[in-house]
Amino acid sequence: NGNLYIKKGDLLDKIGQARRSLHFYLCAAELDPKDSRAFSGQGQAFFDLKRYERSLACYQMAIKLNPNECELYFSAGEVLDFLDRSKEAIIYFAKSLELNSEYLPSLHAMGNVLFQMGKPKQAVHFYEEAIKTNPDDLDLHVDKGVALDSLERYYEALSSFEEALKLDPTDSNAFAWKGEILLSLGRISEATAIFEQVLSSDPKNMQAYKGKGLCLQEKGRYYEALHCYDTALTHGRTCDILYSRGVVLLELRRKSEAIECLNQSLEINPDYEPALEALLKTL
Image 1 (cartoon, rainbow, N blue to C red):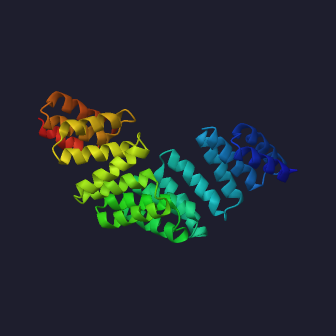
Image 2: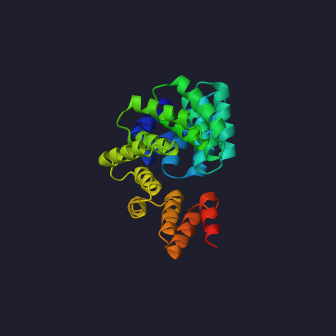
Image 3: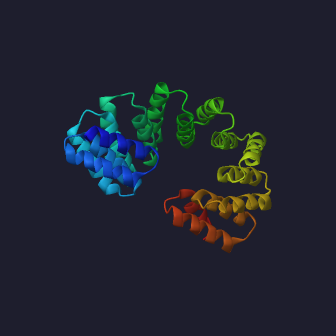
C-alpha cells in the first residue's frame, strides 16, 4: 500500500539512495494522489538529485494538499534559497513560522537568508529566537556572532562566540571568529595566539590564516603577512583575502601585483567596497 511505499522511500532517503527512494515515492503518489507525504518525499529526492525546480514543484504540491504543515513551507523555502530566490524563500519561512513560531529550522533559515540579503540586524533577531528554542545549538551562536560582528557590536559578538565555545571548546570555526573579534578590538596578541592555536589543530583553516596575516600586518611584518595570505589562498579564493593581500603588496611597493590582486577580489565580488577604495587610491 501507499504507506509501505513511503516507508521504503524514507528508509532509502536516509541512506542516501535518492534515485531509488524516488521510485517508491512515485508509486505512493500513483496509489494516492492526495498523500502529501509522497510529494514531499519526491521533493527531497529531486533536491538530492540536483533537480531543484522539480523539487520545488513537488513541495508546492505537498503544500497544496497539506497547507497546515510548517515543515513543508520550510523545505520549499530551502529550495528557493538554494536557487538564490531569497525574497520568495523568506515568504515560505515566514509562513512556516506562522504555523509554528518555534520551528527551529525556519528560525535559523530566516536568520541566514536575512544576513545574506544584507540585513544583519533582522538576522540577529531570528537567531536569538532560535537560541531560545535550542540554546545548545553551537551553529546558532556562531551565526549570531557573525551577524553582530558585521554590525560592529564586537563585545556582543565576542559573547556569542564564547557561548559557542562553552558548547564545544574545540570548534575551530568559533575559535577563529573569536580571534577576529579580538583583532577588531585591538587585542592583537590575544588574537594572534588564538589563530596560531586554531592552525595547530586545523592547518587548512583559511580564516585563521587570514586573521594571523592581519595581525602581522598590524605589526608591520608584511612579508610574513603575505605568506599567510598566500597560504590561505591555496585553500580557496575569497574577495577579502585577495583584498588583504593587495593591501600588503601596496605596503611593499609592489604596485602592479597589488592592482592585479585587488582586481581579482572585485572579480569575485564587484561590490566589495574595501577593494574598490584601495584600487581607486592606486590611480
